[in-house]
Image 1 (cartoon, rainbow, N blue to C red):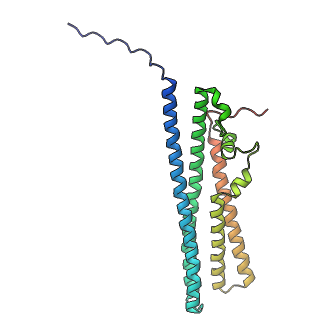
Image 2 (cartoon, rainbow, N blue to C red; image 1 turned 90 degrees about the vertical axis):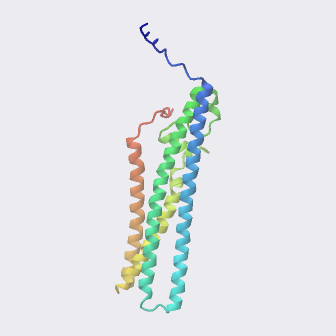
Image 3 (cartoon, helix red, strand yellow; image 1 turned 30 degrees about the vertical axis):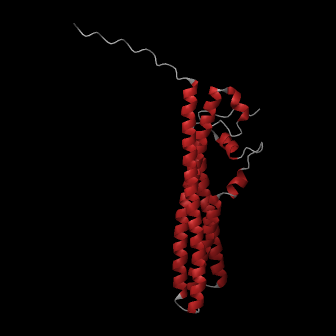
Length: 229
């Protein structure tokens, strides 16, 4: 008896809303866990860096007292400051990367809220965070306790700005030590250290801002915010 041709497969059955909600909730919890783990890791890195800064400054004070600030102290001080600054720059790179990762988590969870609203439009008034995966939507999610986002204060008070400020100070101290060791006048040393620290601060802000704005130029949202009335 010849083999019968298998019956053509019918259309895929529609997934029940309850199953969709369960899948979305699972993804939501996975994003929350990943975001929490990432934030915890970077906070630990920042704490370790600050401990290193404190220990380094204390070691310089103790070494200075023990050696009476003899000819070997400047080399020791520059070495310690250089190592601390290197660790600080690595920490700054990690903090900057985590800030972009956090933006990705926020965008992903905003999309999930859009899916929740599609499943049940009645939940929309109860969502304080945004359901739109664009720039205005992320601003609302980061600060939804008012009609106007606080972009400047959010950036100014961020961990990234804190680390940049600490690294700028360390670079200024390192430049001051190097120029003083070269025998340059005090005012010249002060000017070089200030210009170097401020330049590092400005350059880091420009690099971070360029990366952030460049992302939004390349990004296409799936659920854009409605036009403002």
